[in-house]
Amino acid sequence: MSVYPTRLELVVLGTNPDAGREVAAATGGIAYVANEATHDKAPFRSIVRAVVADPDLLAPAADVAMHLVCSRQIKSHAVTWAPGEQTPGVVGCFGLRGREEHTHQQTDDHWHHTHAPLALTHHAAMWDYVQLSVVRTLDGPALDGIALCAFPTLEDHDLRFFNDAESERIINADVASFADLRRSPRPAVLSEILF
Image (cartoon, rainbow, N blue to C red; front, side):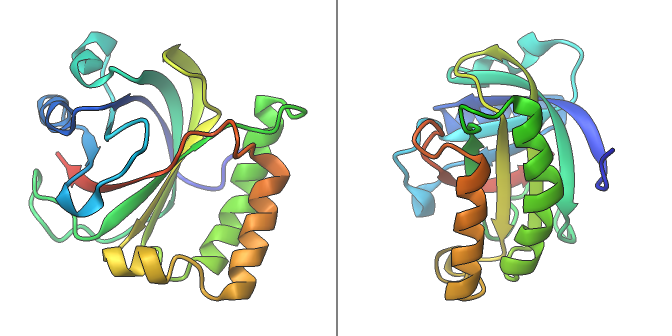
């Protein structure tokens, strides 16, 4: 049983930030998109989250992958801007593949019940945290989940991702206990837009 608010969503990953914005606007979703300040070599440059009955509505932004997920809102920031405006700050987006010796359920249980509380303790500058647990991969590479770690500024993300060296050690050791970083996609730093 989840201790955080959850809901089922469709999530698509793509390489075109403009398509991500357009699809999120058309579906009332959330877009996470690369911009000039967040150039990256990640395998995706946009993520769209939406609750829609027809997955084809998200297809223009789904040239990398499409997943049905259970989203868990672990920590929330206050929204003080209008729909369609870019959220202040940046979002670190981390695709998750579990260790090969673990089932999806074992990976997800650890991520949900053990890692989430650690993240809240050791990422003090993080102002929003969402876990997207993959229920089913509909297209593209399989994932166990996607972590969305938001910070109020790029500087907070780059310089205050961890509280201190001990927090970094604790988080890295925990991640290594349930995630396979070699099989997980390279992280991306994106901007968030709520519609």
